[in-house]
Structures are given as structure tokens and as C-alpha cells.
Length: 434
Image (cartoon, rainbow, N blue to C red; front, top):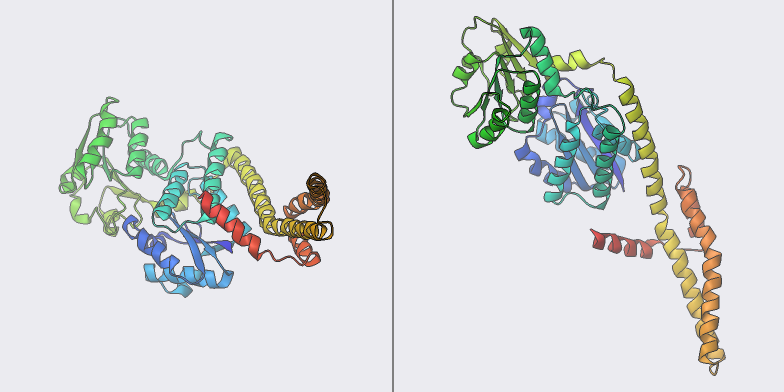
């Protein structure tokens, strides 16, 4: 069984396709359940953000697992499998590990080095675990990926720019409006992206903020963080968007809704510039809004174009080397662990031989003094342990190398070992730990 990663992102698809493939939070459980119904899939995690949709699955076979995962994505998105395959990227085994570590470090993001992906991967893991689709393999892999992501940020200067999709969108808004200081902003949505928007607006010295959200209580909590810093802020519902947009200079929308929240009808004739930042996937802003005079729409598509060739800097290079180091260490540990059933089988075989020979000794020398018999048993076991120590330690060391799989096979062949029994023992022990 190996890990398979199948995804579509800003690197392989346009926003239109990402919009269709995106999985709303209230549909995640259905997609995960469908994945677990597949013949070749035993574990699954779904990562769905504003610029990527990825499935990490533990599969019995590559081709069967890939077909299963793509079929689920096709049914969910309504896109033909042939169309999806043109935009999907696929990573298997070690390559899947490398991809997840790279993603979690923020090195595959639209804004290279952004830290939000760490929280998004953690949320994806927690959601999958709540729905019972995470087992030992993805548990260990995801926890390691999160540690790698933290290390990449703590040991490099990736965080110095403080970049995110939200901050980059507001940078475009600031350019269009010749600054945001003292202006009025409307933030639609009070989730994690809304929180990022509020923080970015505060850094830009915004003059006033209105937060519109379905749950006014959540909006109020976010507004209070601004009020505490001396920035006028209020929370409202979504029923009077037209009035609130009319009063704003910049709008940031990031609701996670499945249909457009801001429509052409919400925006009256403008005598002054308005910048609408649409960070929703699917889109929060109706297409025709961009055609209104004095209205500029900054969306994921425009950001994708602008950031496609943005330089990544030395911090990203150092983070990439950390990822490479961690991938090598993780795969070496996995290869070493895979030989454990064979080592267990060898030691079991040795113990069985010792026990058998001691029984023969008892039958041939029934009157042997008990103390002598015990000393003989200890001596024989010490001899066997010493003989086995070096080969069992070396086989684990050798198996950790990329070309080391054959050493365990050689042990099994030489000693006619059946690792199936130790496999069962190992699985029971691990399950007990979880």
C-alpha cells in the first residue's frame, strides 16, 4: 500500500476549472465517504483551498487507486474524467510525500511562502479524522508534513514578507486607489480569510471597516479586534450589501458560498473608484461586476497571472532544501520500518529453534540439574542474540537506502521466513497505539 496524491491547482488549471472542482466545506464529508467506498482506497484526506484541490489517499495499487480518485472528483465536479486528466497532477509513493511536504511549507502556493496553508492542511487532516478516513499511514504522514512546514518557516525568512493571497489582492487595491489609509472597507465573510483581510487592512491603516456575515455574532467578534486597536468597525448581516458597497472604497469578499454573493444589482452607479477583491472559490462576485464603470475587480485569476513569475527569494531556496532533507529522512525511516516484519520473523524463527533444542535436551537428559539447565538456556539464547544482532541491525540500515529493498527479500529467502505472522503482530501493536 502506498500514498497517492491527485490534485488540480493554480499551476495546472484556470480559475473556472478550480471553481468547478472546489469542494465546499459542507460537501467534504460526502467526498471523503465516496473515496472510502472505492475498492482501492483505504485512507483519504481532502485539501480544498482558494487555489488548489488535492486528495491524498492510501491505495492498494497505483492505476486502480488513480482511477477511483479521479472518478470521485469527476462525479463531484460534473467534469468528464478525460477533461480532468488534462489538468491533474499525480504523485505516487515518495513523490507524493515530497509534494505534501512542499505544499505544507508554502512552496507550491500562489504566494510562495504563505503560512495559511499550514492551517488549511491541519484542518483537512482534522476533518478527515473526524469522519474516520485517516488511518496510521496518513496520520503519520500529515503530522510529519505539518512539522516540516513549521520548520521551513521557523528556520528561513519565508515569513518576513508576510505574504498571502489576501495581502497581494489588497496590494493591487492599494495601487489602484493610491493608498488605503483612511479609506472605508467592506469585508464580506468572517472566516479565516476574513480574519486575514482584517489584519491586512489594519496594517494598511484603513480608516473604517464594515464586516458583513451571515452570522452577525461571528462578524462582531472580528469587528471587535479592530475596535480594540482604535479602528472604527461594525458588523452587519448580508441583507443590506447594496448600501454597504455604496459606502465602501474597497470590498474584500471571501465567503466560501457556492453561488455569487455580490451581484451587479448590488452596485449602483459609481462616481468614485471601487476595488472589489474576490477571493472566493467558487467566485463570490458575479462576472458582470467588472464591467461597471469605476469598478475594478481583483480576483484569483488576475492574481494568478501577476504572481506566476514572481521571484521566490533565498528563503524559498533554503526551505526547499529543508523539504528535500526531510523527505529523504522520512522515506529512509519508512523503508527501515518496512523490514521490521522480516526481522521479527527471523528472531521468532531463532527463538523457536532454541526452544526446540532445549526440549530435546530435556528429553535426553531428564535428570539434568535445574540450575545447570537454566544456565545452558541463557548461554544458548545469548549466543543466538549475538549472532543475530549484527545482521538485523545492518539489514535495517541497508533497507533505509533507496536500493535497500532487496536485503529483506534475501533474508526471507535464506531463512524461509513467512513475514505474514509478524505483520499481523506489528499491525495489532500499531493499532493499539492509535
